[in-house]
Structure formats: C-alpha cells, structure tokens
Length: 377
Image (tube, rainbow, N blue to C red; front, side, top):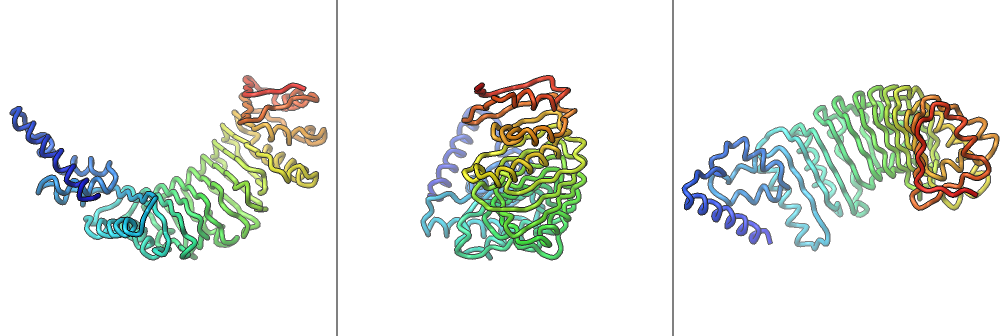
C-alpha cells in the first residue's frame, strides 16, 4: 500500500515536470526555496510529507525539516498495519532534524504500547512543542500515565488531551505559556493533585472540561486570573458530586451542559458577556429530593453568571428555575441581561402558570427574547 502510494506520487511529479519542460516553462516546483517547500510539507499529514522523499534527490530530506508532526491511526486495523504505523512513527521521530515543533498530533490506540507512546510525547516536549493533540483509545490493556516532563513544558501553548485515563499528576506542574487546555474523558485522581494542576496554569485563557470523571474529588477550586472562556460538559452517566469554586474575574464566556451532578459556585464574573446553562433532564431528577437539589444548584449557577449580557437556557433549565414559587422569588435579578434565548433541542418549552411572566420580571433590561419551540398550556 505504501509502495503504491509512493509510486503514484513520483509518477505525478515526473509527469508535471515533463509537461513543464516540453512547454518551455521554468520548473517552478523544483526551484522553490527550501523554506517554502518545508512550509508546504508542514501543512500535509506527516505520512504524505514523507512520501515526497521519492520525488527527487533534492526532495529526499525535505520532510525532515517539517515543524508539524501529524500521526493518525484509523481502524479497522490489523496487527500488521498497526506494526507499520508504530514503526513509521518511530522512524519519523528518529530521522527528523532536531528542530522545534509547532504541532505534535497523535490519534491512535494504546493497547500494550503505553511506554512507546510516552516516548513520542517526551520527544515532542524535548523539541519545544507548542501545540499538542493526543487522542488515545484502547487504554484498558495497559495503564497509561502521561510523562511527567509534559507538565513542566514551558513552550506549550495549546493542549488537547482526549483519553479515558486516570490523570496521575506529578508533584511539580507549571505551564508557563499554556493558553488553551481541553481535557476529555480523563479521570481526576484526588483533591491535592487536581488542585496542583489548576494552580499551575497562570496564563490560561480557555479551559474545556468535557465528560471528565470527578468521583475521586470532592472540592475543586479553579482560580485563573487570565481565564476568558470556560466550557464544562458533564458525563450524564456519571454519579459525581463535586463542588466547583470558580474565581475568574476576566471570564467572558461560560458554557455548561449537564444534569448538575456537581455543584458550581462562580465568583467575580463581572466581565461575563455570554452564558449558556444547558441543564438536561434524567430519570432520577423526577425524585423530589433530587429535584430540590438540582433546583438549588441551578439557582447558584444562575447567580454566578448573572452578570452576562447574553443568556441561553434549555427548556429543563427554565423548568427547574421556575418549578416553585419560592425558588422563582429567590432567583437573582439579572440586571445586565439584554438577550435571552431558549434552546429547545427536541423539547418544547411549557410557559404555563405564568412562569414566563415571573421569570421576565427578573430581567429589567431585556431587549431581545428568542424562542425555538414553545408550548402554551
């Protein structure tokens, strides 16, 4: 398969060169400066960049200067194909010139190769990687612990980690230049190590916590002075019960989707422009004790984002916030909200029993009200 791809690539290049020569035009591809060729190759998937080594003698080593490494293993994957993929990554990392990396992206299954994958991550850190993407699957056969050197990488600016792993964290964590962090499916191990992580992000501006597991953590404090955007999506199947204390005076965008298994306390969100409270319904919320808990947590969350200028709610969030006269009366006045939108993915909003009128009394500066789907009873 690889040999066929190389032959095809070489044939197309030679055909293009022959056409250029016959027409009497200059060989503009062959005469491009090395820097431009290497930049073009950096925009290709790494496997395609390496294929260009057969085009001519001059192109033989051009791919070794690329600053983006992009490896993706796609199923279905037989054992032989996996060995080719793993060996290919090893060879590229070994043969590439020792230049700083802009991007290291790895999408693959772990199986029993955790140590090998960690060595690739360490190589990226050694070469001052700025953007890191790890999407790892099939981890259950061998525990994967991300290398400790990753957590003190001074050059890292953006990191995306998508992996169902217990995030064992080292004693020293400091990302001095990390501006964006996305964690998906990771399991946080406990209070102290989790707190070390969120204390080691002094310049973080965007944080996404997507379907992470907080069962081992009772309290989390996220105090990030530079944070501008916070997205939290709960795993609806988890039974977490964690308290989040969020202190971010520069936060201007907050996005939440979940069932409020966790409790969110947001302080000093005076810069908030946009907030989404996407509360989803589950079977157990019908129980009176659970409904009261969700309503109280919804009220706290709403108070935390009450400085937002634009607010979006799902139908169930509206229902919970207005399910009792007492809670509706205790709801904070949202003085800054000028735009209110009701998102209704597959569910109509019931505005019976004067709930809407009572709700709108809390929004004295509202200018625009948007509905997707409404039911009046």
